[in-house]
Length: 313
Image 1: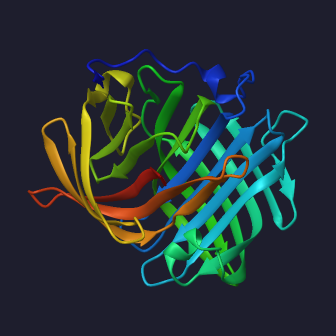
Image 2 (image 1 turned 60 degrees about the vertical axis):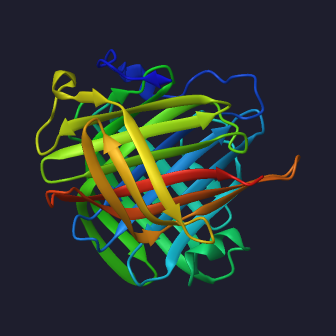
């Protein structure tokens, strides 16, 4: 078992930029951006993942709302940018991800045609739905110290997200907690599963990650105050565990999570999964992601994102 016991060293601002390519086919570098409205009305995320040894970028974006169709972009054949930046162009898709101030502020612009799915599990079964315009004009402003997970090339940052989201002819103003993360290295989605989560309450942000592979149990998490620009010394690093109940499509029905001695019940608000296929070897993984609500035994509540990678055997 690997467990985080003390705060790791600070993140270097230069790590915000691209890293030298590794030699593995599945070496990748990714940036996630998400937000979760505290009132449970809307959650969203985007991910840009570059695979330089395959010459492609994977791009995902989603809007999840209760009692509304999932709005999803999943494009795995975007041509890898030649200029070394994070602006991508593809048929029906443009996106740019810009470092305004390293470790402090990023902006994200998106103009795309998404698909609306009446049932989230349709993402696993051909993504048959209606074409819908989707746009992001958003900024992620740091509200807590960047947290580098021990033993892996990955860090996460609690944020405040503001701007606008466009879904069809609807414009939605966003002012909500969120997070962004950055990781790089070889990632074989079809070999091992993991849990990952981030959620915000009025007083704290909580993040956690757990990997389970070949008898190795890595779990780490952190809690940091929200509402002010927390420093690394104010972060609390702790172990993270999770148990869950999934439905027949392997989407979350309920989970129980612990952060140190804290216990939280997780209930999905709206699902936003994607399907992952290795075309060369025919491997498939279901990436079960949802906008969710956390509740503690004393009634404290928060919203955020719950993620589960589920390789199909």
